[in-house]
Image 1 (tube, chains in turn orange, blue):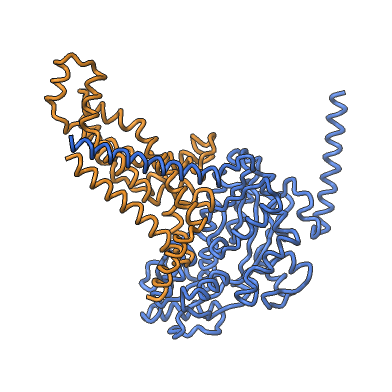
Image 2 (cartoon, rainbow over the protein chains, first blue to last red):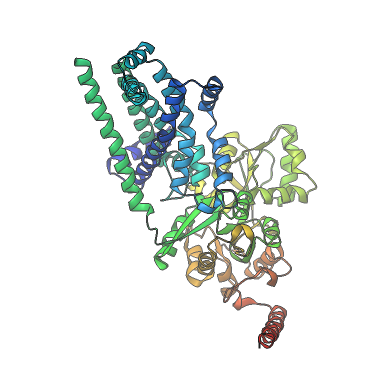
Length: 230
Length: 370
């Protein structure tokens, strides 16, 4: 009980005084997860559009696959990407391992199935009559897409926010690809893991408050958005 | 109408949040990471060394002295650290398992091994000491723990990874004729599978015994993280020796590694200044250093940890030398100045002869060209 209370007090202190180490860890966490999610969007949204609006063979299998990979264990993904990015691996030439860019790549891979699946669902739930209507009014392919995207806007936002939440709160990829290097690749989750292992419970609690606070406020934002979209 | 107004408000709020995120992140990125002009040095190292905080201090001092260097420590168990280096993902090693270091050198992965520090492993356990090992020799203590374990009165917590501490534990069980593969089938033998602090914590919760390096134990004990007590210490078989090894840049996996940077850090650790860092670290909190400086021990013939220095030097060479040297000649590469103070005479002779041979060969080539 004692160290926990002590930890909470120190946590509040660290947050209120704007401890530079805590701040930079949180900022780096934001940086990699925002970029990782945005990077994933560049291919996931087009993929979702194709899955939702086009007809082709193997579509159901593909959708099933994306659904299945939503829950991929982060350590498994981290391991495969580690072998890929390692200097002795096929992409070793780029020397990405143990850099923030490696975490960005890993997290974008991690959240791709989430964005694709959720966004596909959102796009499919748009009333099919709308599409027909747009067509009959003489809309081109692109114009039809624009109409559907506009209608599914909040669903897409939800997909992206859920993806960001997953990226922000995951540990495995950041640990295995980033290496938890102080001042370079140490993000909130890896820092919590290390400081707990090191026995610095107070710092761990402070960091976990920040992590929790951000994830929670984002979840609240998601819920608000969902309400609006309904 | 009303609905779309709310939507727009929320949309703009969300966009602001996202942009703030990117801004904060980019700020952090540029303020911390971008020293791209700096040369990066990745050191793969052991958890016991990292968790004490020594390496954070070392990074600060080393980078202050060499401002164009940027050192990154990857904290892993020694086994994994060696794997990481073998793949070329780290530039050098800072580890403590001589029996794993030798194959690394022999396999053509590492060069210029330098012993930099030492301390001792200890057996810690609950103050009730159910197996009655206090003050016993390590082998008697291990025997007593096992028989108490089989009786159901004691628990052993093993690191269970491939770390230096685990390697030591395996060798200690082996010394009394027991195979860890068999022990792990037994109920009293638990495997933590994580770092030293986590393992100590587990032993503390389970009222078990475990093997720890002195530094990790003192750190956690003083933090009130654990209440385990020191029960067996100070024997030759419990010696813990830390070495630095550079990746061999001639290895196909390691051509891109930062050999020059590795040599700078190894030389720094071996320098008077680097040795003094070891000698000072922890003195103010624990009354004595967490790590003994090896080269200082050789020079001053005195041990800040309080052991007989002559005996200790002998112990370290018995335990951590390969073929009678901390780094046999064939595993040295562009190591100017690193071993000068203690090169044994026969080695000197060999290198002089080799030098003459080289010069002869060079002369040969010259004449051929002409």
